[in-house]
Image (cartoon, rainbow, N blue to C red):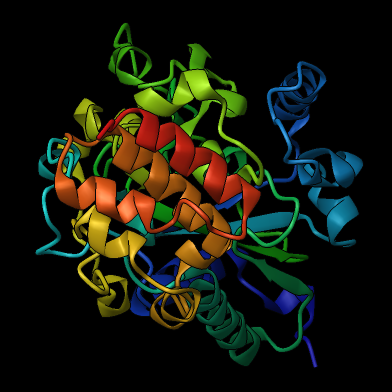
Length: 355
């Protein structure tokens, strides 16, 4: 049973929630309201311009993404949490990008999939709140529903949205996951974070495919993360060479960001790289059978691209690799693959490695 509102000190409860969140392994927590009017208009313009590509789910839920109380009735506050994801000892990202024989996997995807891990922690956070005040209304989200997570995190004081559209924290950079607890508790609001990108445009200039078409405006159809993860068909030919050796996602706009000199190491051991994916050889990865792919990516975000997408992406990277007997033989071994998508990209790659 829930305590009477008159008996709850919401200011103290808010501080307790932040303390409990840190005890559960979150790096930080903040509290935001549900007014996202300006962000809703920005989202509508972005969708109208078609910059979401094939991500139809971005528009499927209408205004629920920007109106928390419509997604979860009764919501008046959102507790937003963040969790750092790069563990100590991970191979230097720039070194991998500069090694054309290696496959680059976005740093967030090297270890265990964060979705269940963070959702379980948010559930534990809700249970701690419940133990303190009794029953209350809540729902936990970790990239699992139509939620404007970066806008909510900004409003909760956890960082500002940079020109690359990624959230940046002044003392922790941008290498962290976000999660939310929608709640009916009238907790005191935190102060929204102010922006500190200034005149810097390094993220815009470094993007291999020039996907950041203007400050704070990303055309997902050109983004390597979209092309290697969300896109199910053929990668446009003019974008294949700029992809380089990136086989799952891309971090360039974050790697170049000056604020990431403050990035914090992950404290969660499950985020440690698996199967040496922080710099494995492309030829070796291309040799994985479907069964090996499914076994080795169990419980990992890499599963999202699927085996066909995995081979498609690596074929592009092999096409961009320096010519060698090993590379050509690896491609030839997949030249008659049952998937038309895989065959198309292997054919493209082989044309760049004539006998």
